[in-house]
Amino acid sequence: MRKIETIKANMLGHEEILLSRRQEEFSESRRLNPIMTLFLGMFALLIFIISFWQINKQRKKNDRTTAFLESVLKNTENIVSYYTPIKDEDDKITDFKIIYVNENIEDVLGTSPLVLENQLLSKVLPIHFENGVFDAMVTCYNTGETQRFEKTNNFNGIKYRFKTNVVKLNDGVLATASDTTEEYDIKQNLISAKDQLQTQNLLLLDNRAFLSNIFKSTSNIVMHFKSIRDAAGKIIDFDTLFINDAISDVIGDIPADVKHKKASEIYPTIFENGVFEKMVTCIEEERQIEYETNFEKDGETKWFQATAIKLNDGVTITTSDITLEKTRAAKLNDLNAELEIQNSIFKDAEGVADIGSYVWYLDTGAANISDNFYRILGFTPNEFDVTFDSYRELVHPDDLQRYDQLGEETVEKGNSNIHTYRVITKKGNVKHIYVNGQKVIKDGRPASVGVVQDITNRVKTEEKLRNKNEELKRSNAELESFNRVASHDLQEPMRKIQMFISRLSDRELDKLSDKGKMYFEKIDSSANRMQTLIKYLLAYSRINRTKKDFIKISLNDTMEKVLGDLEERIEELALILL
Image (cartoon, rainbow, N blue to C red; front, side, top):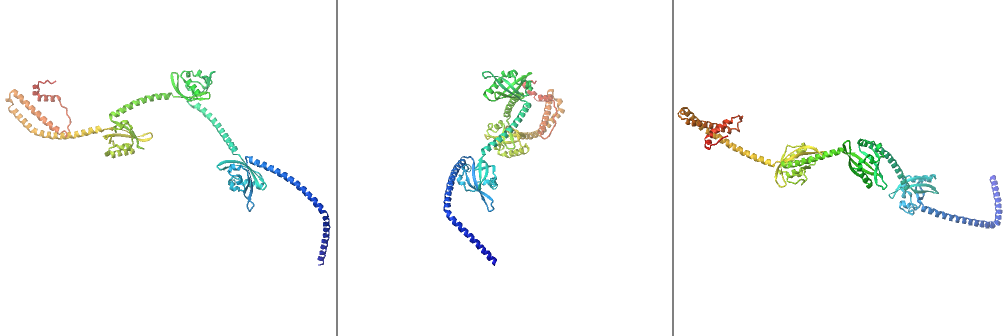
């Protein structure tokens, strides 16, 4: 306890000593304080004046710098913007606030910079959170490292490409974006043009090789001539610059031997047959000219089809051998002339024979018929379009079933067993038609090709003949009945006459005079012939029921019998038979 009190006493004594010292210092400072205060006040005033002058100078400098900076930002083509970060509870940057952006942003977004200030980046430019721009800004702020990148974006339907530098500035980031769209497009166009040029160069090389192969392999003659002009500029000749190997097969020249020779030297005939004038016209009038020309060698004439095309101050001529085509064309013309004659004959024959022809396409029902077929139907040629259905309207109502069956069988099998039907012509006349066709493939389509004939007169003739036959049958039946009756009725009297002639001949013939005997013989002969005629008449009445073979007879005997029957009549008329 004593120790504590001792310590306490020591502490109090020490405090008293310190207090006395402070009182002495305070008394001393009271004497010096006014002077010091005055001095410090003047010093402070001096410092204030100097500071004010420096601050004012710095303010003016800042004003000039600000004016310069504003002028730069206003006149620059770049978009300059300043952002401050927005952080969450974990001190992680989630967005940026737009603190400043210059007026160039309005040309891109169409929005005033004043409207954009203090807006969130995610609201104004959400695309930056997808294309990596936001991540670059975060990296710049966190690391302090400058970020450089180039992005392509669409704003208001317009494609832009910006090259951007992002630097950390104070408590935010400063982004400077320069529009490199035009530069990028030019660069891409240059790259594309370069690629196209390389492709074209390769293609040109291929084309040259391809063209060279064509010139070597083609049978056409390809020549190029350069014009030779006089002092007045008039074309007077041509210089041969190129000619392919095909010329050797025609005139026997080697291309290398005729190169750079004048056309007048190697082809003098072009100045006589008009080819030279055509070549000149091609160049002077700058138009393609086609012509035909011929060339004679070893007594053989060859024809060529030529095409002349201007190239610079020259002409390129391509010729093809058309000798074979000319020959074929001449033959074809002859064949066409013959065919025209045959067609004319056929048309005349159709008219004379009342026939026509047709081509019926089975897939569609359309048909082509000849001119005379139209006339048979009572129409002028091509007066209406013929189809299966339109033609059906002309068919007689009673024959429609036959016509339909003919069509079905033709489509299914290519032909039909039905060949006749009736039609009603344009004038209302009924005609009988005979048709016969065969299935063929025409122009790659199934078709029935055939002929028709107007058999109306034949049908009428057959009908008349049928009626006449019926009448003849009836007449023959009546004649047969008459012959049968007559022959039977006449046979009995003739048998009695012959019986009495036989008795008279046996008993009384010797009593007759010579003339009486002659008359008696005539009576006997006439009776025998009468009996024979009755027998023949009966045989004729049976000719339709019994078949007998024909036998040869002597016409002389027949003649004698006829003369015997007509002897008295011949004597009365004094006839002379030759």
